[in-house]
Length: 365
Image 1 (tube, rainbow, N blue to C red):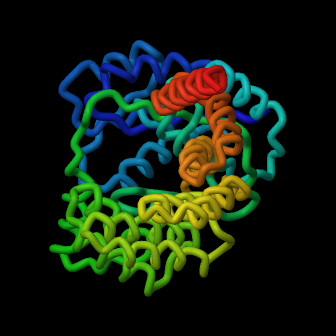
Image 2: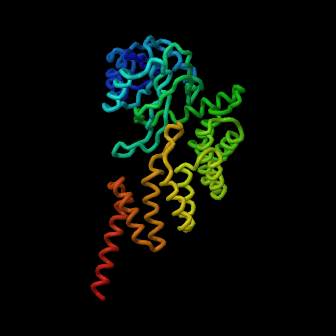
Image 3: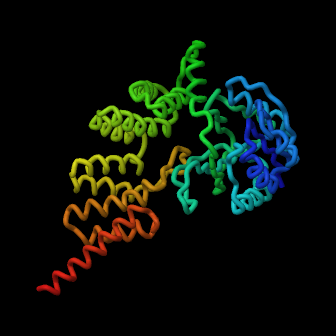
């Protein structure tokens, strides 16, 4: 059975750290906390859960801090979590089984990272991350922000899910501040850094800057999954700038990199729906439903774009086209997925009212 060193970087995490470490104790053979300047009880909480706690001077460099944490590990594999990550009992059990069954020549285990969930706990937005890596094989974090380890060697994809459940707003300007510091220091952003810089600009509503950076990224080298996502992000930027038709072109551009993704197909459907071109909207929504999420490709997956969202919009489109039977069919599908959603409840009331009206009209005849 393999052993695991859980390696974390923390700062002012007293609200959530206990929740994380309580779960981690079930599968981690040692816990390492690298504290980057907490002013609350973070270090004390770490000690209470048996962690080895180290102080580390923050250098605006997440990769450096994570590498520091990994350097303290003595077990077979290094695993990372953020303090506001949640490992459910089901997934704790899966990790314990993984420890028993993992072949010793495995270099890296990818686990799904669910960063947004609905009220039922179903993932809305997720992607795979390099969650468990072989110790002593030279794996290093890269990137001062949005840091990552380049996958290599024998990599396996597991069905284990880590949920990110953030508490509080945090420092929303931090990542952008680091990127702009890098630029001031003369660093030319390329590849992954350029992609995430564009996303940070978009999050700060600097749409023109974000669109230009995404275009620069698309013209250069980069991971295909980031290229596809950049097309989606560019489309949204252009839409915010009132250049919706150009945004549609950016969605089609994503098809150059791989088969159509449900996210792009859904957005195309929404464009045609907004313009009351119902048949075109139906085509793209139904295409989104036929597509399967490319989860193990590693890119971002918005799960509702492959099910609930196309279905509820198809209900509207078919209703506008006068096909009430198909509209109701898609209403039932969306109701099965999310019976408590306010849009589903509105549609339910609409169809009930319509049914009563039709029954009354028949009686009058």
